[in-house]
Image (tube, rainbow, N blue to C red; front, side, top):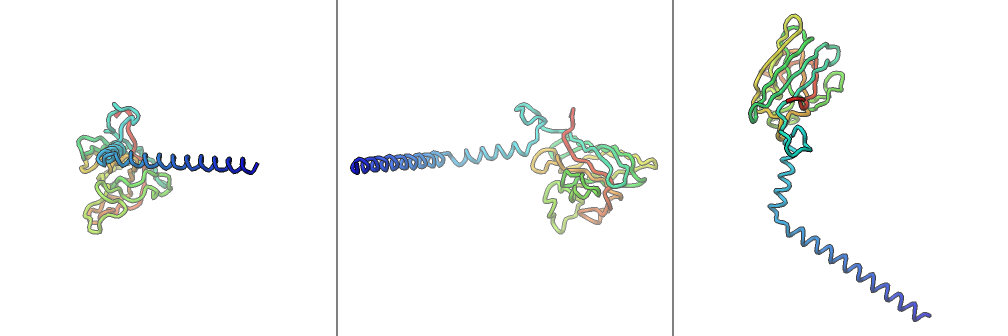
Length: 218
């Protein structure tokens, strides 16, 4: 009986060793196969994925879908203001966007409006939208010697009834690419821009906010 038990133990040990050797061989084969993939192929797959992530399409699930060329921000009041309206964006050329604003409920006078870094208008004071969005560089850490007001869309000049419309063509702005403004927000301020105070423009408090999204029918 003892001899039979020894034979069984020997057979089990042999089978276990064979399984372990087979697993190790499979692992070596996988490593060899992965290392055989040319680096250029891996890079091209990665680049393709990155490019796809940077290029918003109207319908990302459709390979024939066009790129996004129209966007809109639906402005809602911040705090106790009565400001409402829309700001639309149309990509007219690479790095060039046409902006049209139609706003009501403004105090008479000039009001700066900018793209801000976060598409979050949930805060009562509008501060959840964060700082200005820098169209071509870091928004949170702009250079100390910067000479422009980041995210600047110009000014809304309200009449006595509180209405304002504005049209502008902004350069170095895009609805696609790594600096897309989609998903950011538009903030309307209580005062006009002070061009001598970059990058914020000393425009005062926030009186309206709207998230920039893909425009239907665009």
